[in-house]
Image (cartoon, rainbow, N blue to C red; front, side, top):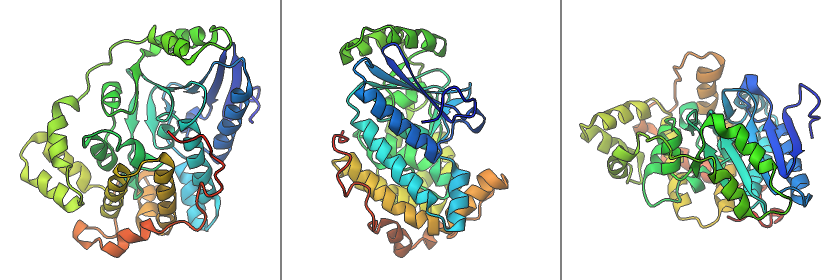
Length: 364
């Protein structure tokens, strides 16, 4: 684990009373995850699980801008271009960590303050206590970089009996606190100026206290969340995104004169046509899947096709490298995406994530 006394440490892990604290420490990079950080978090969880004095684990991000903006996409881009095994190794260990968090035996408290995207969602959404603030900006923007919402998104975006998760996965629009709770991606709202006091209250719990005591300590700092923008649009979203093909979703958007539908048509039209198709199939398969690990397994297999694709490298180029925000997708039109293009993302991995059953207890 990184040494907490070193300013360059990417992950800081320490015990504060009854609280095991994990702090992501790359604020200049919006705490984007590296492989080293994934391994640090895994080790910290091992240590805190074994320590009987630890009542709960608290995960936060250093700096004022966010918990975590996702995986280090530039490193994945560079590794993929070079033909390195590094991207696959990162995803393998990241996804296994996601499953570990989902089955963690102690309360796992994620403070989703500020920006929470991609891999940042993966280290928070599976927690037992998911806290949002007035600064929360939650998003799964992967279809805009030629990728797909991963880290088990085909699981956690499909647990509700509505199409809000389909909307979140395809459109990638940022959600505030109220909307994150509405979609089932967070639990409670705590104003950011009360977070420090909440952490102190948790650290002051007597050793060995029950999970209910942890919940009560958090509830003492909760307030009703601010209203979001999705609730008034929920019926419309359910109607527009109720289809199993992207073409039918676009047709529904084109036929609807509601300003919200017109905005969504513009948003989706800028995304990778191939990524939209792959994402929708993953979401529909996820809806029928009973275990988180099975969704992670399917998504991990799909990352191999991502690294072979044109759109991922073009999307990262346009968003991160050249920053011209003008990706040239291939295929450029929905009508040109073939079944073979999509099927390439659904070939089983030669090295499954969970074949050795070493994630026992991670079922959620």
